[in-house]
Image 1 (spheres, rainbow, N blue to C red):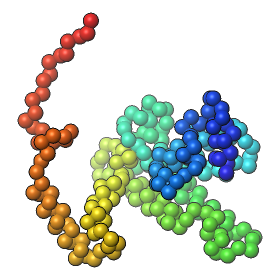
Image 2: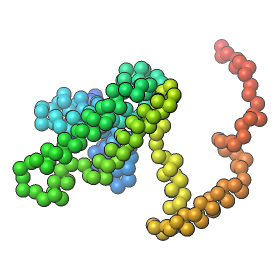
Image 3: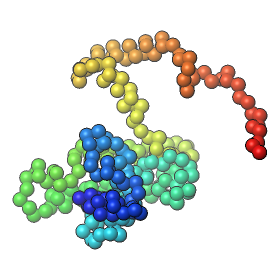
Length: 241
């Protein structure tokens, strides 16, 4: 409700919005927009946290703390280039070059410790509530498990690769999109079967490999398998007068 109040009072009506990226789809979510990562990243940003602190009192302090934690979490795991941190003056976007990077320590201790402290505060509250009622006072167990898996796996991978001789690590390249795309083919091939067996998956893998090996290369398109024979012209273009 703090975010709804900020949007309706200061972003929707004002000409100069303190959060220019916020729009009505950020507030009124649909069943499809729940899955859009960009909406969550724009809500849980430093701009929104600064606006809440500027317009409201201490009643929004916990909301601001929550947003700032996730804003830095997104930055630490979204390092995509060597110079983005320097250009945006944000050290959290710098590439990882040291196994003792303070961001790795912050992710495993401060960030994950924030949710553990949240859980303990709910457990220690003197209220007559069941375990199910207390469970809805924090993030879901699946969300917390996903955060722990992401943080611990990426930090350990970064330390391992730096220790193995890598000069720098760009955390943005750690993603499971190829894996999801691979299993998406299985779901598409299985039709209405939500629980394929091992034999079903094996047959689908054989089918996909056979189709891929026999598929004809398209004559037109913006990609090509073999680009070695493409002539490259390095002559300068004529200048415009």
